[in-house]
Image (cartoon, rainbow, N blue to C red; front, side, top):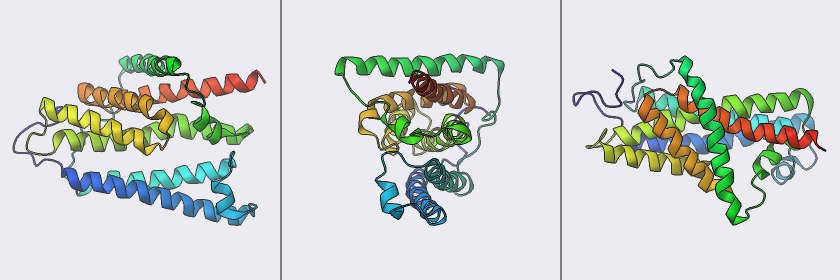
Length: 249
């Protein structure tokens, strides 16, 4: 069964419970990331401790790694709850990879260029701020580790939570779950939550657009791989731009 809602007899996802679990998981992940960073400041004797780290314009690589690990732990807990207690079922082809998925590499690149082009008329500056803040002056193996985490691991965790869990719960749950109207609500709502979760006001519009594209991919393909590949490619363009910028200095 590949459709999002296959039969009326199947119990629908518990929408409110899943959304609440995702919210709690996100907050818990933020707190856990801060706890991990606190331990990191203690072990490295970071000057000023956690307060100084939170206000640093260029945090050390280990702080970003620990923050991401804490956040993803919260994501993982929310995902587990959705499948174990939220009546959410795995799609039968959820993790199936197909040769045609290479198309989504191009789609991710196209989405990045569309977002960049859309911002041009508004003369918005510092769009690369989050990437520069994350990587700072990191070099060597630490730089490679952050690239792997942000380009590959982050899309997997984010797609699993925001599309594989939240979008599906919002579009499948409720009395009209699976209808065209429910799918539209799921696309818009999950894209909004995805954009808000990044905490970057300037990036909101672009992330909202990306979130709608990614949710639509899951709805059309009934698989997570297309949205993951598109997301990886989207992030990869930003990383390539960062590497290119560094090589020119």
